[in-house]
Image 1 (cartoon, rainbow, N blue to C red):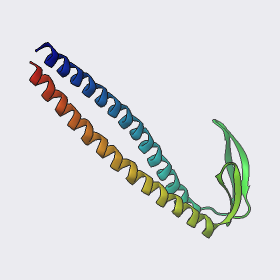
Image 2: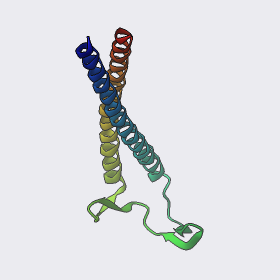
Image 3: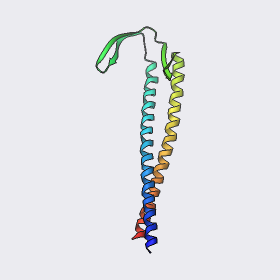
Length: 139
């Protein structure tokens, strides 16, 4: 009888650890999903703003509350950081395609992460149910 109780206790501890591990993974996945959604929203905003860029004089933010005069002299050429501090000049049509590719990639990653998040949530529910069953059988 003592051995049976020890096995139940061990199983319960293992289930607790599994649930804890899954919850940590779910937390990390949720952070990634939030970050990807933020990047997607930013890319959508930039894509929609590209059309509204016109030759004009304005102020550009230099720091938190500091702005400097600026002038857009060419509303068709953009300098784009494509990663690793590599900058490429792109025309308006090129940057639209570039942004569409980024948006598609973000959507794909978000879909993948969302699917994994759902799987984790289901697995956590399953593990909790099994844990509750073990605890009720132990009594």
